[in-house]
Image 1 (tube, helix red, strand yellow):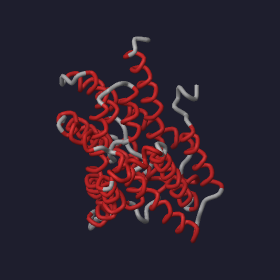
Image 2 (cartoon, helix red, strand yellow):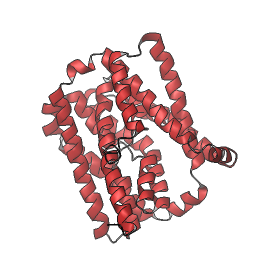
Image 3 (cartoon, helix red, strand yellow):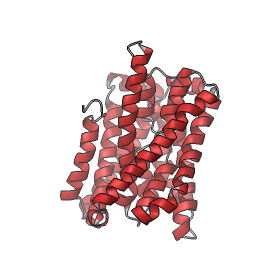
Length: 324
């Protein structure tokens, strides 16, 4: 049952971080030191992502621009439109801060690791997934701050300028990624000897960020502000959003004439949102805001998408092998 629901070790550890932050939150000077270590881990993670991405995969993937354009439309057009349309329904039920988090989630780029993994398991276009997911994250470093500035922070801070945030996000995420690409000939051979190193930094940095974010939120009284009913409504809202996007990601590529492998790539890359990039972006973009409330929707959505995509990828894999 745990395997079916994609409740792997990382998922369990995510819940452990939330529980740990609830009862043993890091605060004061320790929180400052922990924040510096977390930032360094995130920078190393994106350096490793850059070193892992081969030039051949980039060239092969770039040529398939129609696929990337459709994934881009799902990620940065469909999701934001649905999030904005949900405002009259969600604000009265969730409150302003949680709705901000929900909308921020809609503005985020796609995932990298899981998009590629699910595409590979279901025997989709892996090269296309590598490029589409990676480009989504790179483009998102610029688009997400602009969307947040215009539709969220611009509503409460009329003079808010996203330029400084874009620079900070670029220095934290994009510069290490490019450096990894440049140094790939020297770094990648060592990465092949340690194949789990990217996974360790990927999951480890997310766990650290989640613990730090929820620690500060708990200190600020997060669980006094979010009731069980509010949490349930948020889970339902994330589930409904994912269902709508997945149905469109399933049928639109068919209507547009993409082959079966590309359909799977578009489905997995176009229906997910990144936690790895999302939480660091939130730390930069929402300074002085209740960060725990902002990242809670993406944490919930992230887990739901992993569960659903895990089941679907497994079914498609068996269909491909003729077992269903």
